[in-house]
Length: 236
Image (tube, rainbow, N blue to C red):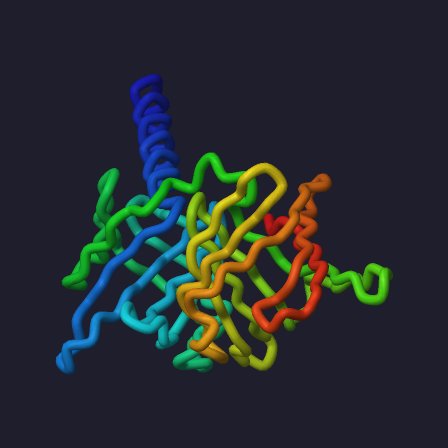
């Protein structure tokens, strides 16, 4: 009985370490038959992930999918919440066998190697967030995060991405992302892809931010130059 108990503890510890190694941002680049370099960035928070393809040269958006995830041994299992290319996949399961090291990630049977960009720490904003409110005309307007219409934002230590979608209609609305920094109370985004308008690629946006309990308050100006004040709640 004692040997079985020790073995079980060892397995659970191994799974925990494997899971921690996966959290963060990963990147791979492939070249199409036309000679176009396409980048894939995958961000894993503890429970949610997003995988995005975009042109390396000009940031033109190609596709995104993702949702919740967990590890069962070395098998990634998840539920797809959004898929810009095929809405029929929303609500279905994703299952991949992974080969992972400290710096590289592979999917069994796929000839692509993802390099690790960061491990999700020690960023103040790392994790998955849902937009839960806005300030308009000086008044806070809250949003029910349980509704099907969601705006999800996933951050690693160095990468960010937001995705707007509807789990009921399976509609994908928009996404954008890139790299970010936090210095003091300043949060700065560098846009590398934007699904609705690639002319915004290369823009740098700086915001004031604060963390109040499980809420992230975010104030500044949008890429269109419009003032904004957003509230994001941590997604468990």
